[in-house]
Image 1 (cartoon, rainbow, N blue to C red):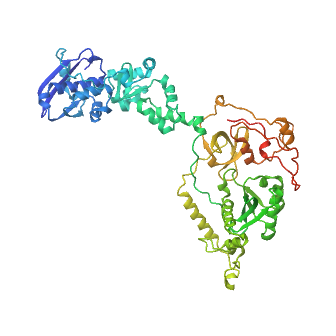
Image 2 (cartoon, helix red, strand yellow):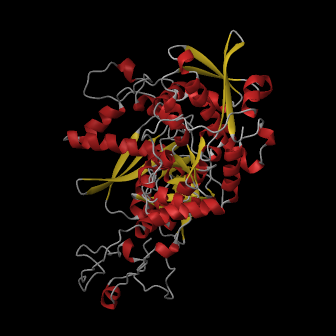
Image 3 (cartoon, rainbow, N blue to C red):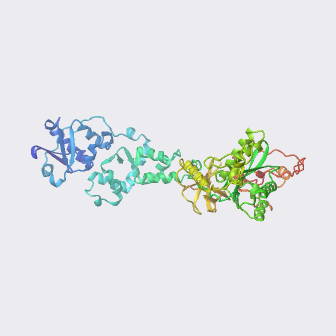
Length: 593
């Protein structure tokens, strides 16, 4: 049916009337699906007096028409909308019937009448295909789309298939056109361009340019897909958009934090003072060291004269002399706990020192939570010693025993009247209750937690969270502590928790980075003890520098720094204490990324 069409009307399987006609010169240029739709329009127009007002079944040997006639008018291809509009007044149901069984209509289409001037489709200005209405773009851009479509071999094969007709089976189709098979009935051509419904089919040479435009505003994957799907299409477009956004280094540097992960329960000790957590906190211009027992939740607090490692070591030695040496001490990565003096102390006393992940206080949650409790006690009470005694003697919810009962095996005598029987020693069998209480906390925590983040391996590229921004980094190795990794960022190594990292495909583009250096004036550097110029002989005098301090130096905000001139005498205070240079002056050269 290249240049002619035929139709017949049947009732109870018998023909009533016949019709056939030749196509005009313009109609011969229609795509095959448009010719098939035109045949339906011709039959309805010819047999109007028979079918108007009745439900009619139309048999066609073109299967895509079934789905097209079931769609809303606006969902049909633009070229077919005008043909569909011409038969909107009829109640039609399209059914597919193989051509070999439609012998009457087939015979009529082979023996047709000459071309006529009858108007099958009324000249209604509906969905007129114009540049300004459907592709409101500059003339140069429109011409570019036309030229690139003409050069694209795949789209030219697709255009030829649309005009000549699709094969009956998918297996008979060229491999390059298989991705278009599922929506073949939606494809149309207008003015040298191909459309999927109202979406423009993009030539391969312009797909990268369209990806750049879609992600020009750095929206997320979902919004970029939504923008693209509204107006254009090519096979694999969604996957390419995902890859484009996931590799964008700008989006990677400003992404959201990781969601909360399920809790990892700390292994409970089986006796008091076997495992303790320690931390240092400040309250009312004083500094304190706190140690809390993992088993009994018994807190020990001491005031510190200064923040030196010597003071911290002596305070812990005082506690050890009363309660014994623990098996393990857990702390953060403060300079007092990472100094050489503290390492010598752990070797001398023979206990294990475990540090939490830097910038992740939850991994030392036992001490952090006790700091909150102790600070609240200090704020509310004039006599903190009585308050601490009452806390140690108060039953822990869910355990039925107080820290004193679990730690000392007895209650403490307080101001409240207590019988001698209650003050006697008792057996301590609370390990199972502690475990049950811990699991209850985990269940409560995990209600709002997602699944565990994917594990990371050495060599993986990640984005490392630094304060409120993300920076490119690489995984060097796994730390022996759970969810803790050694990462390298900007030429330095850090230990960080998994929650501070996100896997990324993006690559840092150095061409967009404006780096600049800061250096102290000579007059200032000479007056501050312990400071050196970069690349000097003693530039590596501090190999044991705390990693948290190092991170703080690395992430100072991008701004011009001005250093006040310090006083001449900085070595000692009036009390005789030696003044140490602030850690932020130990490294003068910074490069901001």
